[in-house]
Image 1: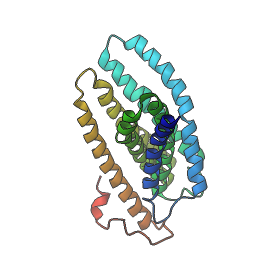
Image 2: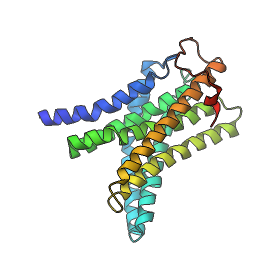
Image 3: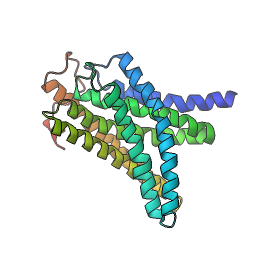
Length: 252
C-alpha cells in the first residue's frame, strides 16, 4: 500500500507542478480558479475517448502496416497518438473555455490548453507509473509530461489568436494551424521514442534536445502573447514585469 501511494504521488505531483508553473506565467491577469478546474477535469476525462479511439486505430494500423515498420511507427506517432490526443485537448478548450467571458486574452488560450493537456497527461501518467514503477515516474517527469505541456501550449497560442481573429476564415486558419503544430510536436517526439528500440537508445538524447527546443519555442509564444495582450489593452492590471520590452519577441 505504501508503494502504491508513493507511485501515485510521483504520478500526480509533476503534472500539477507544471500546471502551476504555466498558470503563474499569466501574472497580469490570472484565470479564475473555477474555470481552470473545469477545463482540467474535462482534460482528465478526455483520455476516455482517446483510449477507445487509439486502441481501435492501433489495431487497424498494425493489421495493415505490420510489414512496414517505419510506416507503422509514423502512423502511430502522428495520426493515432498525436492527432487524436491533441484534437481532443483542443475540443475541451473550445467546448468549455473558448466562449467564456474569462477567455479575454491570447495568453488565456495558452493557459487553458496547457491545463487541458496536463489533465489528460495526469491520468495517463497514473496508468504508466502504477504499471512501470519509480523509474518510469522519474523518466516521464522530464519527457512525456513536458511534451504534453509544450504541444498543448503552442496550440493554445493559436487558439488565443483565433479568439481575436478579424473574421471566421482567419479564426479557422488559426485553429487549424494550432492543431497541426501540436500534432507535429507530439508526433515527432513519439516517433523518436517509438524508434529507439529499433535504432538506438541514444535517440533519447535527441528527444531531450527536441523537448528543450519546444520549451524555448513555447516560452517565446508566451512572451509574444503577453506583449500583444498588453499592447491591445486586454490586461486590466499593470503587473507585467516579466513581459519583455524587446520588439524581437514579435519575430517568428
